[in-house]
Length: 301
Length: 317
View (cartoon, rainbow over the protein chains, first blue to last red):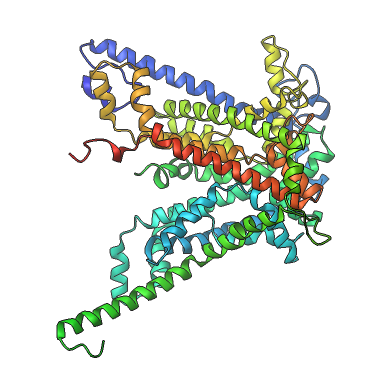
């Protein structure tokens, strides 16, 4: 029992195995557990406190925001800050645009990346590996390098000040998602494909009826990453969108900041509203998030 | 083929033809499936990069036709004090925030790697800020760093320290952005955690029997065993640090007195505020060359410090 306890259950910080008395061992372990918990808790305060401060500010009266000394808890809860802030600018329009852009990006990424990943994972063709490496290499190119010519391309196509430049690129694959999906597809036994082929299934049917249904967790991961990556994107809308009726939430929030830079209570209230969709997705898919990396990316050698 | 007489040869001939047909059909399918990425690569990456190289030798403001000016953009660039300032800002930010972020992320991952109750909750707490980056969070940091009423200075005052006016103080603005970046290390932390969980426990057990202390175990087992993960995080971290835009744009706008003029902000200004597209393309290419050089450096240096298990001597024995 002695050896069992110390050896298996913990990692880098393992207590000494050996001739110590069982009681001493147990105390040592208890102290260690306590220390780890204390550290984790103290650090999580640092991560949570800014959120609390955000919520607290969003509920304060305007004059209380700049009272001294500032109180951590609002004197009265001004829920009105939320609707008031939200209606100072056409945030409903911005929200609609963000939903359109984000949905189109998520769907586009799912469609294009799963097709491409299937090609890389399952079908042999000359130049496939070089192409895959080239694709992965694009991950190392900062997007700043291509924004100018991209902008010129879209302006040639007459798409500046439309939502298209924010949507179209997602339909041409994204190397990181292609990589994730390819890794996942490769874990599906090829015997399934072979059996289906013998039964006369076409490549497309194999893709739609075997690979995709078996890949729901990986597709879910991609959808969530795509959603979160797009929801807060500022640079692209900033470059392409001019008219306010096409603003996304990120742009709208940026405009709001410029106009009401001292109204921190309403700024925080509106910020919180824009974060709600992301927070909801995060809490619903927490396990996938926090464990997903282990499943899909680096973990498995 | 038709003239072949001996039957075994004929048979292989047929077989060969049918497999080669199958191969060809498979290859055609492969290209069809991969076509979105091939098109995307040409349309949104390789094409634009080539275009931007050409563009960098021109003067172009989108209204009049581009005019070939040779290397003038690059000459102007090297004579622009602000360009050097932006290089300096991006360099300092990368050199400080990347190693700092990696260390903190690794420390958190080690703490989280204990098999104890409630670890998933802690993981979520640390990961959460990573998920919600963007304008809203940048705004929150503006408020937190407010000189008089921001939470950070309020807390500092409690312990008797008069904090600086962070974002409006040229000496502190960059430091503030680095501190804010630490909030978003959750992704790096999770990747480290995955690496830590891949280390065989027997190594620690053996080390303990040999009497190695915790620090020694960390240095001689943990660090080498996760070096490939560190490598991955380092590459991503450097590239990410050179792309910082939203935080700088929203929190400081590049100020005060250009103290947070990141390369990306400098590029954005020239392209989309001054409409110097040729000049901005030159900046973009310099940025690309820097990233390329750094990435190559990290890759080339990796044999010195990255340990791959497949290279372990006697592993096959």
